[in-house]
Image (tube, rainbow, N blue to C red):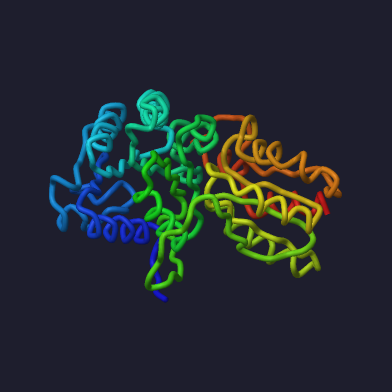
Length: 323
C-alpha cells in the first residue's frame, strides 16, 4: 500500500496508460506546461512531449471535436475539460457526434475517447463552475458515465475508461483532488457496470456516487453508534448501471437513500429510484429518500453555498427520518 492524493492517482493512471499504449494522448487547457488546473497531469508533458500532451486554446468545442477526429483515426485521446459546466460549450460535439457515430455508421466506426472533467461545489467557484453534470450526459445513449469515489477507484476506473472503445465521460470531484488515500501499489482496471459494496449493513441502503460515497460512510459510522446498520453502495458508473446489486441490497434492508450531487429535478437519484421501483416496491418499508443539490444555481458565497451541498449531516438526517 501507499499514500496518494486523488489528483496523484489520476496522474498515475494517465502515466501508466500512456506508457503502455503510445496511441493514448492528453489534451486540454493547461494540461501540459502547468500540469493541469488541478495538478492531475504533473510531469506528463516533460515525460511524453508536446505531441502527446497538448495545451489547447480556450475552445472546448474545438478541441473536443479535434479529439473525436483523433479517435476516429486510431488514437485514444483523453480530453480534460476544466469544469464539467463546460460540457455545455462542447455539447454538440459530445452529444450529437461522439455519442452517435458508432450507431450512425452501423458499427463501422467507433470513438475511443475519454472526457475527464471535475464536478462538485465547495470552492466558491460560483454558478458557472460548480455544477455536477452527470445527469445531463447520462440522458443520451452512446456515452458511458463514470463517477469514481476514492483514489484507488479513480485510478482503476480511469484505466478502464482509456481502454474502452466507446466515448466515456469521466467525472472527478474537485473537492477530492487534494485529499490523501491509502491505495494498493498496483491498481488493476475496474470493470464498468459493477457497483462496489463499500460497507455492509442490514437496516438501510445508501446508493452513492463520487465524493458522497465517503460522506455516506462517515454518516454510517455515526449511525452505527446509535445501533443503525447502514449498507453503502459505491455506484461507480451511472451508465452502465448495476441494477442487480442495488435491488438485492434493498430487498435485504427494506429502505433506500440515494445520494448524488446533481440537481434534484431530473437528477441521478430520481432516475435510480425510478429504475428499481417496480422490482423493490413490495420490499420497501419506507419511501425512497434522496439527497441531492436543490434546484437553485450554485451560490458564490460560502454562507449560501455550503448549506445546499449534499453533506454528511444531510445524509445522516435523511436516514434518521426514514428509520
